[in-house]
Amino acid sequence: MSFEVAGHCLLNDVSFHLERGPLTVILGANGAGKSLLLKICHGLLSPTRGEVSWQSTSRVRVRNSQAMVFQRPVLLRRSVAANIDYVLRLHGMAKPERNQRIDACLQLAGLSHLRRRSARVLSGGEQQKLALARAWAVRPEIVYLDEPTANIDPAATLFVENLIGQFSRNGVKVVLTTHDLAQARRLADEVLFLHQGRLLEQSPARQFFDGPENPLARAFIHEDLFC
Image (cartoon, rainbow, N blue to C red; front, side, top):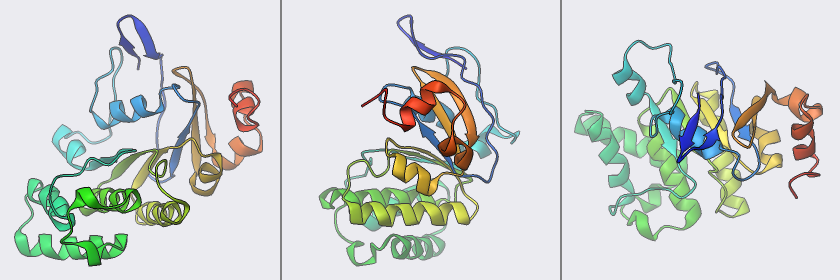
């Protein structure tokens, strides 16, 4: 697939296949197209050429089985609990089940004590935890995470990484972008490497970090090209 704006190609003939299980990390320099690729995969944008296809034959089911968390969380002007309740109501869940799901998600995210607080006054780390809890609430098959720890402190980063690991271990396909190579090493099962809108490599994480095949990927890892 490709994506163009005003004649400028931002993604150029990007083609890949993702398996259900491995945690996938997308790497690349700023402007490589990582966030754009996530938005297209999630259906927020449509490719100008090519398509995104799924094994599921039901487009409605595919949409409802996905979630995305942005670098800067998009939260409603409501309480912490009400932010989760809103998406559950959209999915048609009855109130008793919603209440149980909210309690479980807030406990998972360490936010039970903040359930009645306005989401907009939370710290950056707390907001990201809420965004992840809200994504988890709908029990997605796949979740897209765009730089989920870019704007939070080290303690919150560790907590968020643990949450992401729990998602993956519980059968959720995680596709994550990050500029943090150490984080990618900790989390990734496989790596996609983008450079200037092109997918140059897709490989198991250990193989990628031990010695990527593409010279631009090797330069990226050693920070010779992009520092």
